Image (cartoon, rainbow, N blue to C red; front, side, top):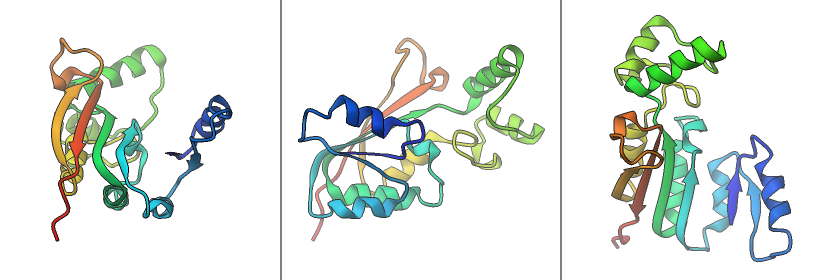
Length: 174
């Protein structure tokens, strides 16, 4: 089962790639309530890959709640690292060489994002996204059993552009 917001036409592409295999289903999802149709199903593993930074922070807890209700095992999450020295490096490269930036930052936001003080940066998709806050939110329903960098294992976490998080759902207490 695959759910995607379909921002870049991913649903049509993956449906085409798997059209000969009827055991796979891919649906467009823009709201946590879209997961409600699966409440009778338990998945061994759920994945959210480079997605949660795009979701309105006010509804992320609802998504996490819904995912926890249908996941009876692991949750794998990948997210971008958008703060600290890595943020500043990416921002300067975009400004100097690409001559544009996806998001506008005030001087104050630029400073705070550069030192990792993300609560002082207006949140909009990647802008102001803090993967460590997201990890804490997910840990309200899941236990984090591994945190690692995804791309450059020789670099420390704060210098890595992508973070991988592996969670397991603890047994439900009656």
